[in-house]
Image (cartoon, rainbow, N blue to C red; front, side, top):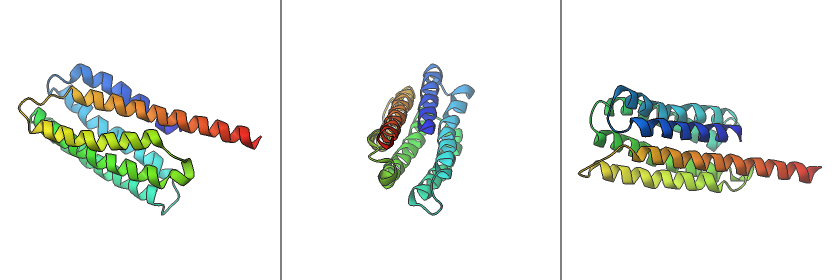
Length: 176
């Protein structure tokens, strides 16, 4: 539950920082672009450590680590190019990890119950990633929309933390 909260708050902070830097592909914007999937790498590694060895969720979280690591490298390269390059890479990464997030949420349903915020976040990530790829192919791609993506994801992670905290308190109260 703390991991979801921290992940959400970090995403919100990243969104604020990137919003200020997204008007051009400066070194600062490039560093922020690489950091965002890096945040996902750290969060997925920490989350995977809490899963039983051999569990499907653990395997998918490790898959997310690999995909997000590759995305960080690809975004470092894309940041030396155009807005379209960045949007295409970010969109592909968002779509793949969004689908993985949905699968993890479904697999952990027995352990944590219905994870509606996590499911919605994953679904939106998968869809928005496709929209970003479409925008990359358009006439006037802009990077400021990535801040909206990160802020939205941050809100969903914070909501998931709140749901898990509420369920934990309810279970403790029922046990008492």
